[in-house]
Image: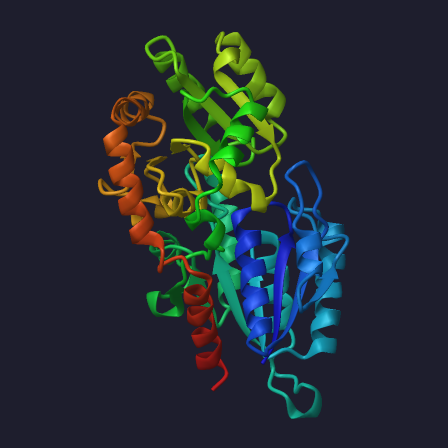
Length: 393
């Protein structure tokens, strides 16, 4: 098949890694694959060079941006449409909000028009990695996003969700019917997470960030951005730090709130307890998790955070706010789910793991066994390919 994937930007992020894995494996299976993306702007890092090194084409739409910009959006739409006319794909598969809207409208505009050499018009697939509407923004903005997504849903032949929770929320909002959706858990290149690094690598990583051998490290991986929940972790640390001298909190990532977060830590007199790695490439994430003891994830909105199964593959227990798809991987057998924004529950869950090394080991091993097959790249791409085949029969 000729397949075009469209995503807004190739920053470091779960949706982006998911998309690159999908493109890579589809190309390896003999499909003709093109990836259309906007430029990777901002401090969150870029996966663009990684995409260029693979066996599929990459096209950059320079005006495609995450934020709404009527002129840029119109230009991007026309350019996407131009490329789709040229490529004549069987499948157009979109990711993320902006690319999802522009790409689906552009692909749908070609329906009813015969492709070159008798080829069929493209079938349109959209992956829901997360939803633009959520409880932490105004009602009018949510209504606006839902209206846009409903309109785009009419131009979509099939949806793929990264978690059952995304399907439930989308259907509840009127974005299609349950039978239009297929869940494909977001794949992880598992080898580096499953294999333990050399102990000296772990010691070297810890030394680099001033972390002692006896320290218990609570790691958080994610953009330093709104709704990622770093403020709840800081407050939890304020309660735990006086009780346990050997605790260290490690923040992996960068973003526009880096300065504010560091200031909040300083005002809480916790500077000696926190470490920042800044931006790490995807190849460095396994080491950061292996060098830590507990993963803490307090994002308030996320389809299904890839860092949860990543930590489990490293045999680390997790503490997560109970949002979206988290409950599909986090249970009493793998970690702790806590009520969103509930600092008391968050603190208690972290404390149980801090004080009980045997519990950490048991939950970590259980988590590893649970997610190994579910998040394998082949499993995800098998599911996606089946959706394509069904649409193109």
